[in-house]
Image 1 (cartoon, rainbow, N blue to C red):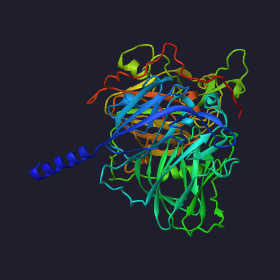
Image 2: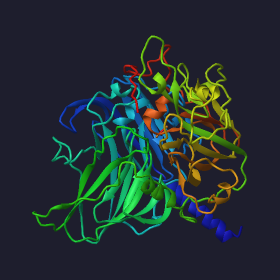
Image 3: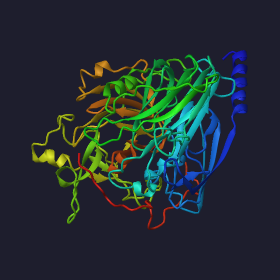
Image 4: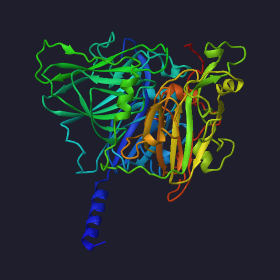
Length: 575
Ligand code: C2O
């Protein structure tokens, strides 16, 4: 390397080191009373607010969050979408990377945020507690590096939540009860009684451009988002830059984020922004609740009436599919890397519902008189109960999990048009309850075809991978055809995600490089479906980097862990 370039290199290295900061937060979790609708409700909250505090960092910073648990629940906090390079003990997944932080205890998460920027979220990763324990995690470029799009006048986090008029502890029933409202930044807005005045309002200045940092923190709902009379330009999804994509509607699965530019280019006035659920499941009794916020132009006259956007239908699959599958990556943009062409591990994973035998002596109103369940490759995931998966792996403790998650479903069948005909079809409907993992060699490239099944019913499943972003090489409907569809995969500019909705009755093809040792979950980000067992875990072996010893103060499981501080009543529903 010529000397001048070497010097420049050193200078660059220096400036980036000099700019890295340590960002510290204290998350004080306790039960507080809130009243988004007509009824006061006690919820666990971080620092007394719903949503919780927004964390702002720059790429390269170290984030330190001291979680003090003064609530009545066992808690972990997960940093959704953060790579956790060399810090998998900080992933915050209950019984996967740690035992929970018990009431009156605390734990400090500490990790570097490198190689990614955009909008992510943090949330509790103990069952349904994510409903009220969540917030934004915003990663801006290192100092002086501009965004790869025009500088916005202001940045506005928009956090979508889902609200129940009941104790969050009681949400731990199967299936989760229907929610009573959706919230924008904690506010239900004027379409619900008792919250008319509590609506999210955004004042805008004519001609200015705003960066909306949109997060779907809802527990169980995909959400459409629209702003009356305005288009937005999407510039990032899941904290990965996209080619600019102009749209009048957005859809976010639970766990997904969208960064979009909104220009106040309409005549002065009042314009609603609105969210409404998207449900692809057939016949599910889903209320079409619409939650609104308001955009107020600076010089709007008082008497103006507000314009409402026309929301997509509850089951508008084509709008959802168009938005999800049309956006491409910003090739050559910050942190962009080309798709690896060589694949080491090929997996075909079926995702869908199934049944669990109805306990003797009880009546289950589900399909065929059974309980509902869910699975990946016919394995219904069970969390370990006495030791976290990663500790079991690290300390070689046997009996916690089995290293035998299959690369293929046990049976090939017409996945999307499942009709039960034979006894083996019937067996297929009852997945095995297991804690099984798939071990990956360090740096191997993994390709997964995720095939949605029609067992019991079809529904979009937002599959979320911990620790890695994956390329989404293709989306489609029907059964994946390894010859015809493989030719159509996008290897040039596919968007990367940490969460992707597998189309109802369809498939996606994902690829990622397993370059980070540790135990990483891959699961449906609809909380209710995770409880059905739609999950599994990868264990990435050591290579150039190794899984270090756990921090000495990592929470310990008690001998009789109360993982769930809530009744475990099982209620079922019929379609
Ligand atoms: Cu956002 Cu496993 O979670």
